[in-house]
Length: 274
Image 1: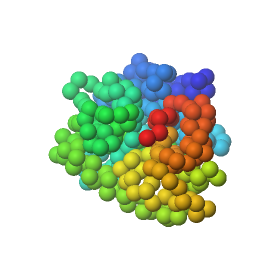
Image 2 (image 1 turned 60 degrees about the horizontal axis):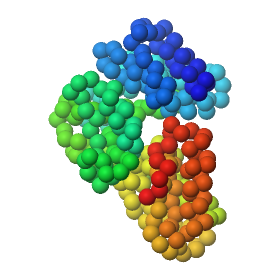
Image 3 (image 1 turned 60 degrees about the vertical axis):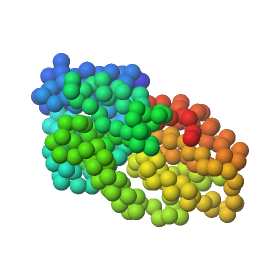
Image 4 (image 1 turned 90 degrees about the horizontal axis):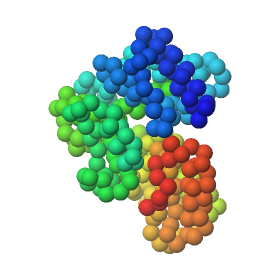
């Protein structure tokens, strides 16, 4: 926590040096985000950025990440484009838990909404997870997902369903460019598989394209019985096993509750397999 707070302070100092008023920034340590209240309200995902910052090999790469964050959140480089055509392949679906959806909604001005739906297209959410739309922004090792709001859809002249259709097309193309079918899962000896895209869209990919789970095969050729059990651990990590594979389910539970939950709880989507 202390290191994350120090990182947030470094970002704040960089934002102020770039011309932002310090009083416009509100850091919510519990939520892992900083809210910039300027002409455009921007939410800085401190926890997500700190995870990327922690992976930097040296001070030069850390400085580059901080500079990229300044351009994204002070200059608006990561803002949602003004037209749907400008989004290109950046428009993608993303999986958020309902706590994150509610927290983001609370940061929005009156009259603004965060469009979303459940895994079966339902509203209100019938479960812990929901699908939102984001514009993916990446530069110099920095990855930011800016959520698409109701005002963006109005400006584009699109419904949520229409924009979601384009986002799914982009995700399908991105999936095909990723690992080949025989390299999409890495298997533990218990038979539990872990998704291999590792591009921050593993969870939503599995949620909207369930065939990716249905066609999963163990490399040892062992046939498994039962139904599919999936754990959406983080946006970049999905665990999959079968309901009658007791060892695989034990490994899944240990990974979720004894490793990921303790290592980085803010990045955990849900600890409940489905």
